[in-house]
Length: 226
Image (cartoon, rainbow, N blue to C red; front, side, top):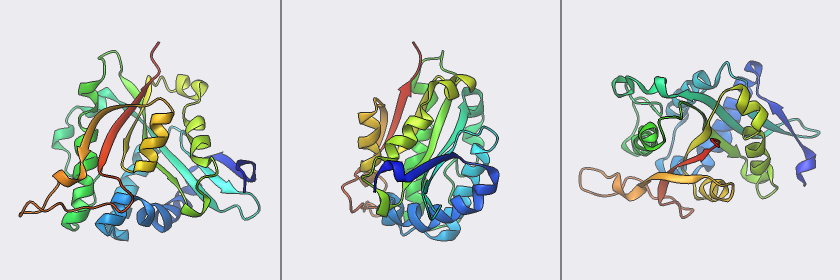
């Protein structure tokens, strides 16, 4: 199957339940750190609902549907993140990646993502005040290696869309080796990393071990400043 057999659409509020179900059925069980943590639906849905809140109102998220069946096979959820939003973030319970009352393994995923997330504004020039935050990039495992992820990224990186949002770049916490490779190929630079093995239990034993070779989370950024 080729990319031509898929169609991209701007995600709309009425798509939210369908996107949530897609992410629970695919991203939750297919994303390496989530799989390693044994993520459960209750904790995952809590984090996804917060993601939807951040993404609402800017019309800069995209879904891919399979022609014929019209099923969602991939999505890129994007929010607009402003430097001023980071003020007082230290006081937010759980951070942006909050899985609620969950296991140590699930909490470890939040620790990795939040540690990367919280470093961002201190690592980019002060002239950058607004960026697109690539919250989730997910392609169903049955539809990978068909160029869909690249199409979603090209949609997200469209200069006209970004200019309208006054975004100076795109940032992502890349938690899988596959996404890290994709973003590197698209010109994203690594600003910070967090080794998976550094998040341990009380006895110094790593809480997560990914089965796809992912050994770290990366904070990755593509600047659009000229």
